[in-house]
Length: 432
Image 1: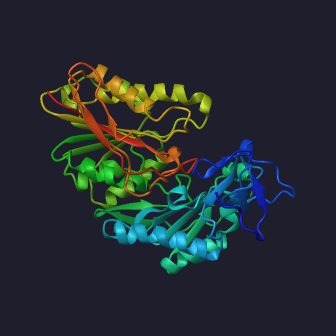
Image 2 (image 1 turned 60 degrees about the vertical axis):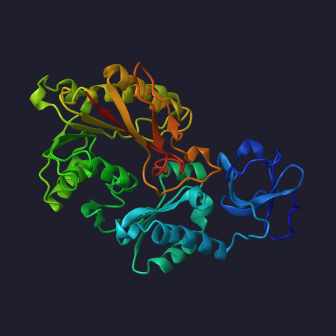
């Protein structure tokens, strides 16, 4: 290992040898520096032997005390560093993935996935939404703003941080004025987006590819969209997929108003129902004529508390069982699309999908698990950040006569609490 070079940056020493490329270094692994740098300061990191380990943000008030930005001894964390990293993130989306050809709404910077720990930027047409998860990134806010405007000179920028993040990271981010609502485009479908509202944006850009995939199953079908939010899946099923009928159910009356506006914007005739899906599904008439060919279940996160993860998982399993009851009797194939919201990592990433699969298998032993996929190709997760991974590439079938199937691991879902949180979309094809 190389000795750390002399320089003006404060030096923070670890209690351990640096044997991992993980960008987070926790408080218990760090010696208390004297003098103590201010939260968000850029520091040089050395291991317990004094060997150079990297440069990054220091925050003695945070459980994640060090966020490593670079391990390259020659790379300085300066203005040019942020210009390079932000430029590379924009180029990935525009030049390699060519997202501008299909949408004007996507995750532009995804924290560790783009080498910028604690920074998330979403694009909604001409509005760029910056969310800070680290005091260090907040301190660089003006530089970040300038770099973004170089690539999107006409953009309106809305920057914020959740109150619990500000408390954890010890910084104060004033609530900015809300930007004007905008209309975004995705595969030719239009949606309203209102950054800064109580529904954040009212739209989840990360499920873009899943919405498109869903449409392939919906021609001439009756579609039920549970926890429909602003109607993304249901409206895509109707406009692109050619569904004969779409019903959307959600408890939030405010978000259903946005969903109705989105349907009107696309001239899509969809019936939205304001109801608790548990009650609505239990009261669902036991009538084949009222059943659906395609059921989508995309629930919100039910807990932020590690102690409540298992009870929340049980609720998800109950939801899945009730959703399967809304499918048509098996005279022809029917499809159930399940989306598992992001959770913190106390539950191993294999556990929830496997439990969902077992519950589905018990409810319908003839079911063929046809596809498992995560959200869109971008945002991406850093290779050294397991918290950002979604599913293993392959899961084997379970139950008598089950057909082995493989999943395609494509990316990670947008962050709700930590930049590494993710979601999984699992579809079942019920075949007779």
